[in-house]
Length: 201
Ligand SMILES: N[C@@H](CCC(=O)N[C@@H](CS)C(=O)NCC(=O)O)C(=O)O
Image (cartoon, rainbow, N blue to C red; front, side, top):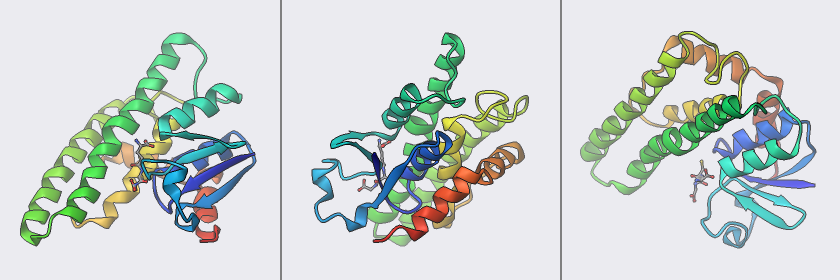
């Protein structure tokens, strides 16, 4: 049985959506309920996935593990399309996620409110540029990888929700917003959000 360690609204939400998309049973554990979470993940971050006592960390690696192990439509089998899907996953996880992470870092680390606001706005402009790249890709297709949604779209949808925590302007184009709306409306996504709210602390 899988155990997924999460924090509400964090990137671990995307792993939970993937578990649901794959129809897998799992237990949800709020990181805040664990006395010494660093024993689970020395980095201290979510997600972490416990597989019968063995712990996987790093969201992209967890997703690739699950998608390799269980039949799905989220990671194509054909080599060149699969490579593109992995590239999209990494673009989301290793390029867009860190861009959003800067907002949290700056907000927590900078004391001077004027300096903080200026730095946040610069970070937000970088995020907007990344969303413009996504918007360009979505001019001819509904999802990052084509006609079928993938883990990259799920991750991007989770990240898009983080902008509301900061008083900055992040431009998300209409086609990107439509993608976000479709992913957010998936039964698995809705169930994942609800499960996070219900999971005991
Ligand atoms: N590279 C890691 C980053 C994970 C990460 O940044 N997780 C955030 C939540 S989205 C977190 O747990 N932050 C709290 C912390 O690092 O203590 C991954 O992709 O899994």
